[in-house]
Length: 330
Image (tube, helix red, strand yellow):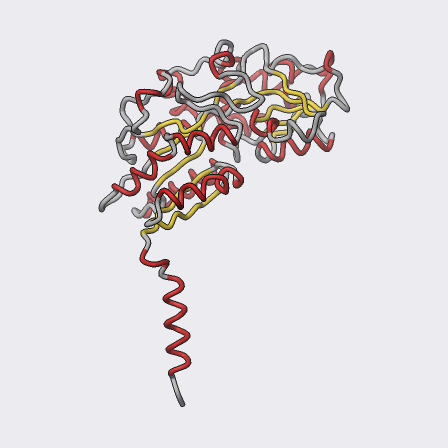
């Protein structure tokens, strides 16, 4: 029996799968798949010696996966990009993240400069209110987040689940801090639906299943030329600015390629990819996304995140999740 055909096949299989000796780097992210697809060609051109792998999931799922890897002592992720800002604070406080500064650090708006360097804001999603004008007239639409508890909107309003979506969780933290738990009791009485992520919310608004919701501005702007029924409300009680945050887990070995790749996201190509995906840049020298107001205008009435408040909510976030579950599901 001849083994040559088997050996030849094995040779070609291993040759085709060694990827020309490229170094592999894993990025775990909650960025949308179309954003990743937009960036990939430029990343491949900028880093031809790297094989960049993506694990794309919701922020809460990413946090759970990485926490498991850290417990096992072997984080697979080289770069983390997701919207659960409070988790990055926890990782930083426990010494799990590399301290470094992007080359554009001095161009960050002051509120986005982390002097410790353990994590950095890649983009700034904005949580707004949206309604379907086929169902809701402009004069009848909610004007604030607080309006979502108005009985006239019973059974009409929805948002992402804070147990699955990092931006929904950030919004729940902001609303709980501003209005207390009584507000969530009122939302439950109003049959408010917390479910899925922002894509699920926008779909329910479009199908009229729940014609009103809180959702990321980027999800609405993606349809600005396709679905004129979607109307944005910038809440009178302030938008909730979000944090698409980057962190680099500590690991042994040379990390120079990882740091160069991470820095790319804060350069011209990386930030333009963020604004093309309808997110605001944390850097002062970039224009807002097409169809969006400038970040400086939105921040005038935005929820006032402070360093002390973020640290306080980081410590209380599991307790807040438990209370949320008790109210909404019992």
